[in-house]
Every structure is written in structure tokens, then in C-alpha cells.
Length: 68
Image 1 (spheres, helix red, strand yellow):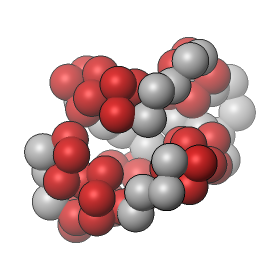
Image 2 (cartoon, one colour; image 1 turned 180 degrees about the horizontal axis):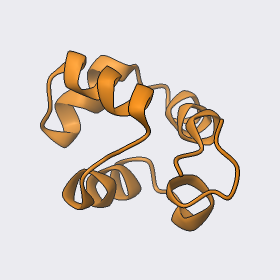
Image 3 (cartoon, helix red, strand yellow; image 1 turned 180 degrees about the vertical axis):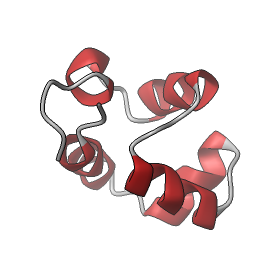
Image 4 (cartoon, one colour; image 1 turned 45 degrees about the horizontal axis):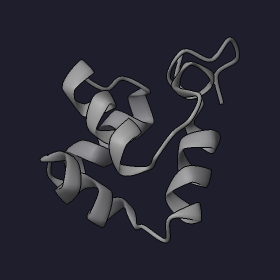
């Protein structure tokens, strides 16, 4: 399950808003919000997030044992 807090932390670390991240991965702001809420992103979106946010350990964010 998605570790939402860890993903948000990566966004903050890079100084990016949800709107900026949404645009960068090719979805609307509303779609990004809904993906965050549900904790489900497509594989293409995950790949773009990993690259955009320079995530070193994607397993801990996108396949977390505990849901946040």
C-alpha cells in the first residue's frame, strides 16, 4: 500500500506542490488528489514519480507494509 506521508515528504523535499507533481506526471490535479486519497497509482505514474522525486527506495513508499 502507498505510504502517503513518505510521498508527501518527498514532494516537500523537492519544493513541489500537488499541482506541479500532477502536471509533471501527466494527470489533472483532481486525478492526482484522488490517486493520493485511494493510494493507487498506475505503473507509468509511479515510474514518473520515482524519477521526478528522485526516490531512492520506491518499495518503502509504493509498497509499504502499513498504510498511512
